[in-house]
Structure formats: C-alpha cells, structure tokens
Length: 468
Image (cartoon, rainbow, N blue to C red; front, top):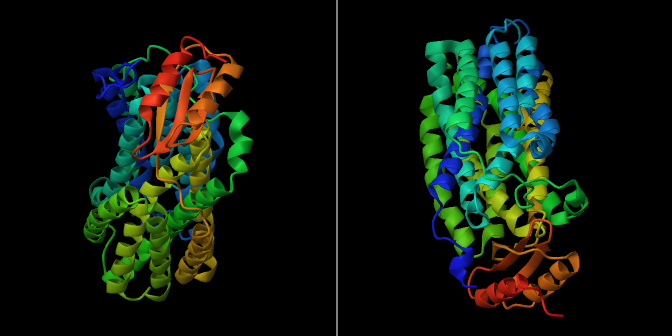
C-alpha cells in the first residue's frame, strides 16, 4: 500500500461543501450570541430591573449554563437519532429563545430567552456531522475553518453590534438572531450533503468511557481551567466596559464600534506572527504563557485606569491581542496533549469548561459590579488570570507533534494492541493508538523526519493480518 492509497491531497467537493456549510452554521449561531455583548449592558439600563448589574450579568452569561449542561448530551443523541435531526432541534430552540428575548419587556424575560438560546447546544452534534462528512486526513483543516469562523464572527460582532443597535435596537438584534437560526436550518437542509454513513469518531466526539482518562490528565486540566478563566473574564468585562467607554470617551452606545474596530484589527495582525512562531519553532508554551501574562497586564491596567480613555483603549488592545492568541493556541495544545483516541472527549470537556466560564463570569461579574463597583470586576479578572498564569507556567511544554490517522481493516482487540505496539516502535512516533471498533490508527508523530513509509507498510500488512 502506498501513501496515495491512504491520503488524498485535496478535499473532495462534498467535503469542502460540508466544511464551509458547517462553519457557516457555527458562524450564524455565534453571531447571534456575540452581537449583544458590546451593547447589552447599556441597553439594559432602560429595562425594568436593568439597573441591577447582577441581572445584567446573568442575562449575558445565562446561555453558558444550559449550553454546558446539554452540548455533550446533544452529541450523544446525534449518534442515536441522527445528526441533522438534533441540529434542527437545537436551532429551533435557539430561534425560540431569540424571539422570547426580542419580545421581552423586562430583564428577567431576557434571561429566560438566553437560557433557551443556550439549550440549543448543537456544537457537539455539528462537530460529529463534520466528522461524518470528512476524511480523517482533512478533519483538522475542516475544524480549523470552524475555529477561524468563530474568531472572525466574534471580532465582527464587536463592530457590528453597536452599529446595528443604532438602526434596529436590541429587539431587532434578537429578532435577527432568530432569523439567522432559521437560515442556518435551511443551510443544513439544502446545502450540507447528507453523509454516506454516520458512526462514532473518537477524534471528534466525546466518549464517556474515556472521561476518566481526560479528567485525570493534569496537563489537560490546566488547559480546561485556562479556557474557563479566559471566557469568565471576557463575560465579566462586558458587564462594565460599555460604561467605561461611555464615561471616559463620551461615546454613546452606537459610537463604541469606533474603538472596537481598530483594536480588533491591530490584535488580529499581531496575533498571526505569534502563532506562526510558536508552531513553527516549537515554542508554543512560551507564546502561550506570554499571552496569559499580557492578559494579566491588561486586566490590571483596566483596574487602575477606569477614568482614562486612552489607557482603557491601550488595555483593550493588549487584552484582545492576548485573547486572540490564547483562543488559537488552546485547541492546538489540547490536540497535542490529549491521549490518542480521546481527542474528542478532551475537546468535549474543554468546550464544557468554556461554557461554564461564560456563565460564571457573567453572573459573578454582574454581582461584583453591583455591590463593589467596576474596579472590583477587573480585580476579580486579574486574580483569575493571575492564578491561570501560575498554573500555565508549570505546564509541560507540549511535544512538537502532528496527528496522523489511517484507515485499517478488521482487527481483533489483540491485533489492534499488537499493531499499536509496533507503530510506537517506529522512528518519530511519540504515541500510537489503534481503535479496532473504528478501524483507525491514530499516531502522534514528529513534525519532521518520522518514518511514514514504515507506518504505511505496517498498516498495509494489518489488512492481511499481523504475523505473530
């Protein structure tokens, strides 16, 4: 068997269509989530109960709680009931929650709408459909498309949210969110191809049997605490940042995009070389720790510069540079550290930690703002990020590896264990897992110089039975 039998250089048209379509589903859904962030706290002042920042924080973060509770069950349900059915159900709930929030006349009703939005937790089901629709060698690229779409959506929302609020108001933004969800259903129905077959993918889906391995892995726990802290601080900040920009910069709610636009552009430009340097030079830990340190400096700067507009803008710029780097490096670190065959489980726990951070940050940030003032929110964020920095410094540097996956023939569990042992003995192979049920071999190999020819020969021989 030669390499061409296992790998194909390009995605097929069907794979490309599925990847683009599913990335757009994430984008449409996340756009609806993010658009309210830069404007909601100021809008809420005009609602009954909206002067209570505790409720404002709950409204911002409430969707994170139901999303955290339901996204893994949705993924498992998609194995039983079908990917698209579960995605339709989640998008319907998300649209329903959006329309409830659009018609709300009190902060409490908006909280209910946000809880319903979060119940449409389709991330795991969408990822499973992507795995069904792409071959293993292209799945990382397809997932990167989704990650990039989410990042761009977040950046665009900071600019579009204030601009749109001027024309359609908060009710219009929530209504648009519901319409986008319905549009996403149409994309699923008529644009994304039905997969030829659906089955479990250990690299993309959570496996309850591997939860123990993931939860006992100290390196993964560090990263899970990191994504929790990153998004808790993000949500807490948006309880108070709109007020700070209005007070110090005299910017109304519809003018604040003038700050966000240059800030996110500068942050994006400076993020790219940092990521390239970390990946290409095997310095990912150093880049990661430096970004956490920059995040801490940004939070401390905000705590002491609440009355200086230039200082707030400078701190925001530092914050978004660090945020973008960390958002990009954390999934890469998860992939490098997760045990072979448990990447999907590790990502499931990671995503759940992120959602819990959104809820915790919104709720506690609102409570601190209400009872102790704006500076207390940044002090809380600084403590959280400072703790993360101490944890990150102690992290082991991840190996400079890439993941390779190969199809296998039918194997017994004994044959799979023997093949894994032999693959692990090949030059440049750091870890090897062979999953008999899925008929795949998953290898973590050196970026350069590993003996792929020997691996291909063993995999080819496995289809005819491994000699004992």
